[in-house]
Length: 206
Image (cartoon, helix red, strand yellow):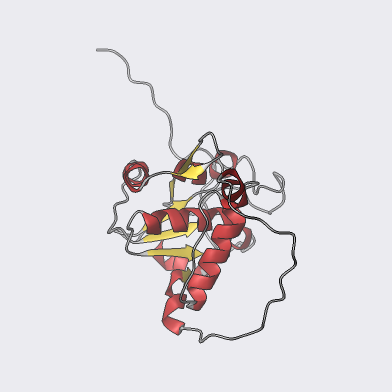
């Protein structure tokens, strides 16, 4: 997150949701720009205010808790949790502290693909994986380019990173539950799963 992947991708998601027509993210951010020897300045710009038309249909990539709940148990829709592992297994409620939220766990039926897995280390810092590498990661949890995906994390930053990665990899139907665990965990009427996602069982040799 310190690299800016979280902040810039969240900006990308929000502008896309509003229907802004031209949104790009600089791969590698400012560090990559400087490493490439490209020009920088200390001049402070004077932006000019303007406006653009919000496109209601663009908001389809934003879903709320009610829509997320309706997708629980719905065959064919992947509920994708991209939080860190301690949040996924219910040891912590948030990246801000173990007990920041009242409940720990995950949305029932979710699959887990930690957001870090969309990137790989390079000499210049973390970079997004290639399209095929991202699709290979998705295949480990049964997600293809045509799978409808409902993303969530804690409050949208890490999920925005995954949103951009999936779109770059050709995923056709990706939406985000922007309230994510920060909202879901605070509503006791919403179901959660706690503990380890599956029971580990040892098989005895015949």
